[in-house]
Image (tube, rainbow, N blue to C red; front, side, top):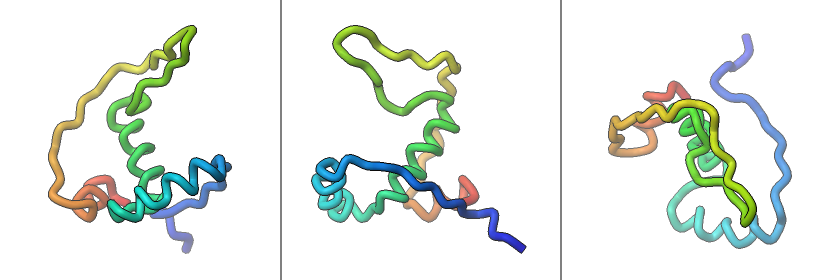
Length: 85
């Protein structure tokens, strides 16, 4: 039986960005995997990219509706449980 709670993903990250972000994530107790999972869950819950994407010429606007999810969580374990991770 395979574990359906986790799936691998290989991504490329700019080495300089990774090096600069690692100490920040360490300080707040998150891994890169945690950040990507949180971001993907926010995309799923809100049906949009959870931050503004733009450049000097145009702004990318998500065609999906903005769906709010307002239940607060006391800790990450509670969030993971809610998201069934």
